[in-house]
Image 1: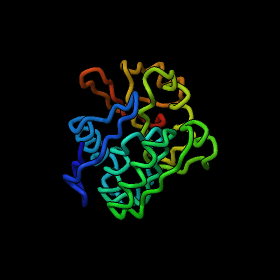
Image 2: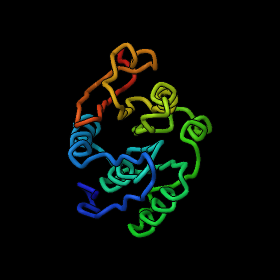
Image 3: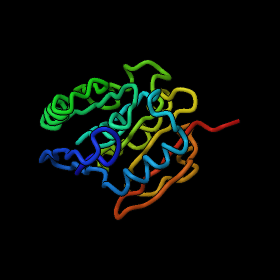
Image 4: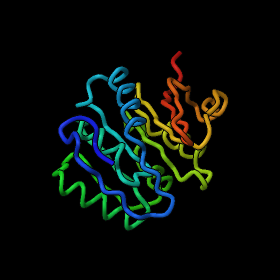
Amino acid sequence: MRIIGGQWKRTPLPVPDVAGLRPTPDRVRETLFNWLQHLRPDSSTLRGLDLFAGTGALGFELASRGAHSVLLVESNPQALESLRATRERLSASAVDVRLGDGLTVAAQLAPRSFDVVFLDPPFDADLQSPALIAARRLLAGGGLVYLEAPAALTPDQAQQAGLEIVRSGRAGQVAFHLLRQPTA
């Protein structure tokens, strides 16, 4: 597992031995960040949130590419310690790491605070719908939500969360999606 672009390109990221942890593969992250570059080319203004951070690969990738700020939220103490160690090793001053349940922390954050929200909740926890609803509330104008899920999200499921699918793909057992608030 490594950062694939930006100032920390090729930097390895530790993968703590935590049950259920599924790091986003390099090729999926490369696809995602190509989409983001196309839709939001000025990464220096982006405020990112990785609500179920795990290894922090998505958040650190965004910070590596020059994001203004990134908040990583993780509930597992072992994974949290790994995130903090990585932040220190990289001197990643734009990255903040917070211990907590993703949905609980999301409810405490100010509405419209983020330009990009990454969602990769545990597949067996049935958090996809509540996480999408929480993410929509946190999106600034023109913001984007990235979701990893075990099955492809339908347009109806996205609409129930107040979002629309912009792009989607599949890699092995993972379906991934980029969503936004519907345009008028």
